[in-house]
Length: 310
Image (cartoon, rainbow, N blue to C red):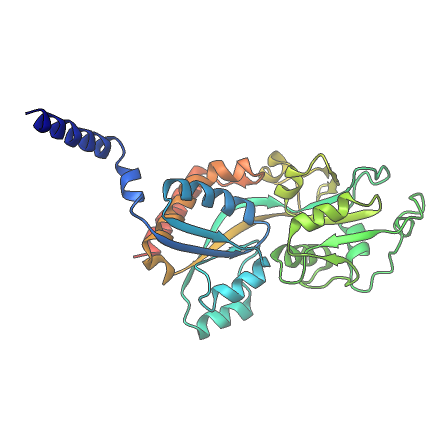
């Protein structure tokens, strides 16, 4: 009789768990892998989503690489990864490769970023920069070597430049906005697809200047200073959640994306990850220093993804 009563209690506990936690129970059945690569700018958002997803789905292994938007597209369009993080839209040459390899994909906007120009904490002379000055510094074959080459009142100190490499969507966006053409840039600067390397470089020399996504600045405010950018109205604006959101931080604000292939959505763990991404990014994007889209936008993206994945 005692054995019978214990069995009944055990069964009641199971029923209670299934009633209270159906989503967790179902999610725990997911297994396999989700492979992601691409933009270092989008990385903080995707990493945050991946960590939360794996807590709820411990049998799924999510890997997030950082080879730049272009590097990620190379892997994405040859089937090496399921998802590409992108800080720009897909290019025409990448579209051709997608068509050649018969890769059907969906572009999903996930947040907004303010590309941030940074200087060393001990730099006391730069109060703001405009597009014309940034062009003078970064244009191909630029003659700027010293800070005094920009403004004779500034120190005759060597300017050390740091920025992303040519596979980066941030590089593409910056060069188009500042120099009028993607990939048009002086070559004599320290390049890295890892924004943490750029942070370390600028923080280590008083004469340094660099640029990367806002989240990396937000995480390193104690090491770097952001430079106010003169916007289209002539206002000197620092990047912030507010200025990116209200559009006053221009022209260096931009959308961020993830790309997922049709074939990848046939894998339950990948489909579930994208659904989770769109349900959680409004909160997580803000936590890592980016500007989330509206609830309405995320719901619309979720609906679009649902139709795409059928």
